[in-house]
Length: 139
Image 1: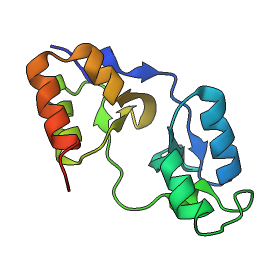
Image 2 (image 1 turned 120 degrees about the vertical axis):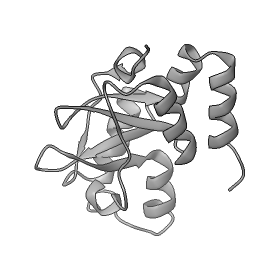
Image 3 (image 1 turned 60 degrees about the vertical axis):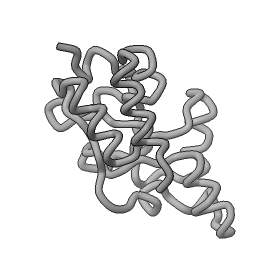
Image 4 (image 1 turned 30 degrees about the horizontal axis):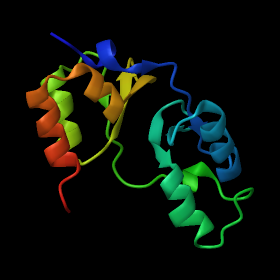
């Protein structure tokens, strides 16, 4: 059985909830990613920030990127899967929640991220079609 641990990118780095959006943007640039998990001072996952969030919720609103924090953009329910979650459950959850990136947790700590490209590399055609249908369906 293939699990989240088998397909995730390891070494995911968090942006701290008190770090600025400028720092988040620089981290994304340096790492070549479009999103970062937001971790709190308690070391737990508090959300995910995307490059789109920074543009839509900060730049377009005229916020100071060197003053606004990642934690200010963390909102709502945080989705994640356990490292031992099976592939069918991952695909179903990402599809249901229409997310393209999923944090992977083990022992209450972030251990990796699953992206749509990870799924594309590891899913058979049936599962990949199901994922695409749900995530990219019109809302």
